Structures are given as structure tokens and as C-alpha cells.
Image 1: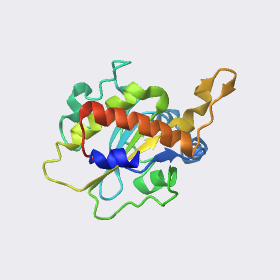
Image 2: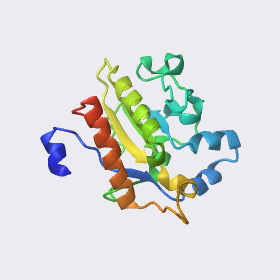
Image 3: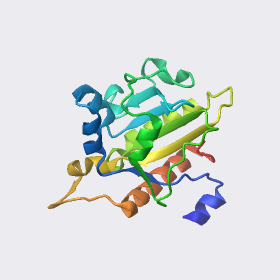
Image 4: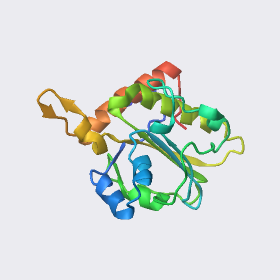
Length: 201
């Protein structure tokens, strides 16, 4: 895997996934069902500014056109940072959001003070096509960063949160590090090869 990525000059990001207690923690932060529904969608793109404030929020339930979700509905992705597709709230600032994410190397996720925009993208193994569509939309949107602002983007497997909906015959499928990494490899390599992408960001 590593030699393949190096051979094709692909800047391969680290693997991230959501803490299994994410739902419980959100319930402690708010009892607003509408707000919680937005933050519990399997596909999301959250854009944070330098101060760690959520400024643009995109979720699958607000993207029409299933199974080919239109992430650019009403042309929200045609400027950078994009216009928010879902209501922007203060439930999760960047620092709080990162507390509920885990990395494959167990390293602490740094916010990096010199970063102008921090983007968190949720993808799901059980929504491969839609995940690729969201990743593509975000990467195309980043190309509109004409002011050359510094951007950090991380891709987060959200399967942990939806494990009760993912089943094999006769038993539930439990998500772990290896599962997330394996499916991240498949998803992103197919994405890179299809779009002939050399750099993620």
C-alpha cells in the first residue's frame, strides 16, 4: 500500500474515526432534537475558521438527489469557503469536535494555529458512492481557494456511530481500527485512481 501511494505521489492522509461514545456526548451537550439530528448524519463537511468557529456545514439529509447526492445544490459550493447548506450552530466548536475523533496512530489531533480553515469530512463505508461524491465536492471547492489560505482537512470514518445499522447475516458488524483503515484504503484509492488525483489538498 505504502509503495503504491509513494509511486503515484499521493499525499495520503491519516485515518480518523468517530469515538463510539459520540452520540452520548452530544446528548449531554443539547436536547434539541433538530440540532442533534444534523450532527448525527453519516456524511458531513464542517468548515471551521481560524478561531475554531463553525462557518459552513453540509450534511447528507440536506443534499437532494439520492443515490447521487447533489452537494452543490443552489450552487453553495461555487465559492470558498462555501455557503452553508445546513444551519450553522454553536454545538461543536473545533476544539470540542476534535475531542470526539480518534486517529489510527492514536496521536492527538492538532488544530494548528497557522491554519486558516480546518475542514472535517465524515465518510461512511456503507455509503461509498455518496461518500466519494462528498469528498469530490469538498476537494473541488478547495480549488476555489484563490487567496491561498492555509487549509487542513481530515477524513473521518463515521461507521462507528451507525454500527447498529450495519449488519452481516446473523450478527452485527462491529467497527474497529483495522476495519476503518481497510475500507478507507479501498474508498480513497478508487477515488484517487478514478479522478487521477495526485494530492488530497
